[in-house]
Length: 90
Image (spheres, rainbow, N blue to C red):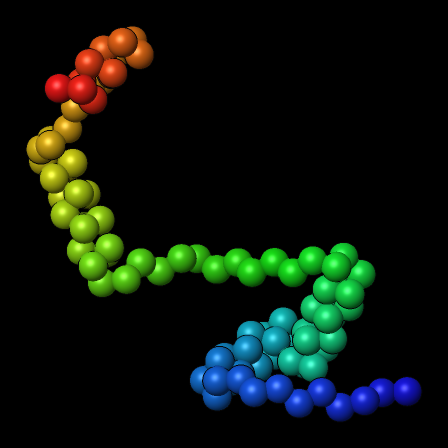
């Protein structure tokens, strides 16, 4: 016996999921059913995604990367833990 599951999902996300499922040769329904089966069987849920930094963090990462390429604001290398601790305390 089957039943209907109705969920709310962002329209663009649904369309993208349908495209991915189609490219894999399966329906979105099959993808969702398989994920629910895994959830029930394992009793765990895993969320994974490539984290996307916000604008402020991205700007900071770009600044740090640029400075590193220029050799600015760099310390080390350290050849002992003692030298590293001295640098941190300086």
